[in-house]
Image (tube, rainbow, N blue to C red; front, side):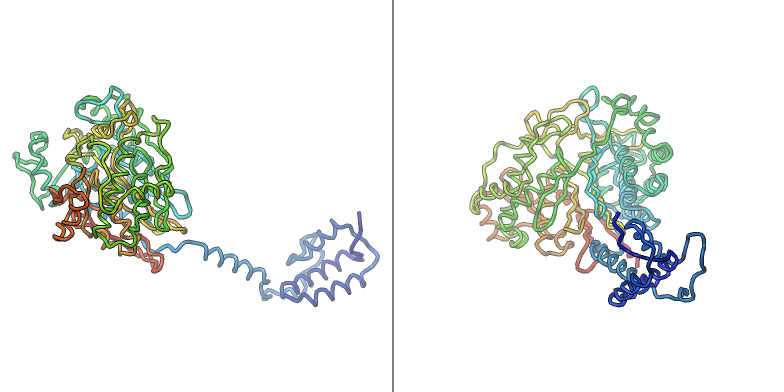
Length: 601
């Protein structure tokens, strides 16, 4: 070994090095060099190896001597010594780390299709739950006050992204039963399993606490305008004699009436107390198997939630995150990318160019949906490049400003009376949940048991004519639910979604494109909407004569108004404004949609 430091005494070296470390902490570099030089010449006789020298340096820099307590601390080592400058360095590192953190509003909020669902979600957030917890509570609550739209007899899909984490997709939609599709088109319900899996993966609150608001609503809730309308219009297709609580004396409840659903309350209590087993393996499942054609205990107990990586794509400097196939998240991304190539961000909302470019992007996306979409657990060769911006730039070149793209074929399905519900939650950690739940059509299959209605999701296997969307046991169909999360380089900034059946992708494209172009979120949500049905334009507000003529000259065969106010859904959205650190929301007046936020300052 090579000797480098000729010191004479262990104790004197420790004392000297302790003094040097103190001076180092004060930043006296020149003084240290001088003292080291003098020490090396003052202490002679004993030589240590390099390893020993390093040990002395480390031990000499301690605040007090630990070996054998040979000496008491010197008077210079008093308790008021200024902290060393490395503390300031740590502070600088911490500050740099804080600068790298995303701007998250000191707030939390819920946007949903009914005020009672908003209240249920907000109660969970106020009591320390997170976005996943609040979304679950809101989902159960809205299934009680909007039994025609979603519920435990149906399914859905949810996206979640925590700040700094990769997004996740939960597909808990209905699957084909073991014995195939029954005449009723009822599939194995996935809602209960989906809520359980979301809670297992991300929840913080007690499961029982998430269920209590919906149980209270099942015991007593006020009939909304929309529910009253749906009860009135559905009299001919619902088993009204079985639904005395909805049709007392055979007459539908009116708006403002009190609705009591004791059978549903009992079912919800079983799920609260025994979780998914109550639904898929015990009493509720046994009742379903006994009463509902096509469902059996094997189909119920074999149900699994699909957990996938969402699809992502670039648009307007954002990352748009959507549900993967067989859901059309990819299609919304494709439409946004095609529209961006057509300069949609520069176009005025609902101008002729805006309408035409988005209508043609929908035509292109629709052709992919019909020809190529299917359940990835059953189809191996799905097109993974639909959201490729370079490829979509080529598709954008196919669009002409003065003519329509040709249709490949007539629409292969009917979208008669579709309905879903959407929930968006942002918690004070910046986690975003975007969730769309459904029975498929209003009241689903119209079959009722154990306090809830059953879905008719299997009708969605009529979308497309290829083998990609062919039914077989355990398989999920192509459908239209399209929850979205939009993120910037710091993390998620918006959750958005809507009911509306086939119109969901084109509606979301209109709103997201308008918002990304600089329009306030509430204005983007409230603006008039349109849809392309074959060569017909359905417009929420009739165009002025000049625009009407311009659209007809392009080739649209007819321009008409929607059949009902519910036709264009109810978009529920929350967005984080990075510039102001505010949480913003939008209330869609087309239904009873609501949103609320609270600050944590």
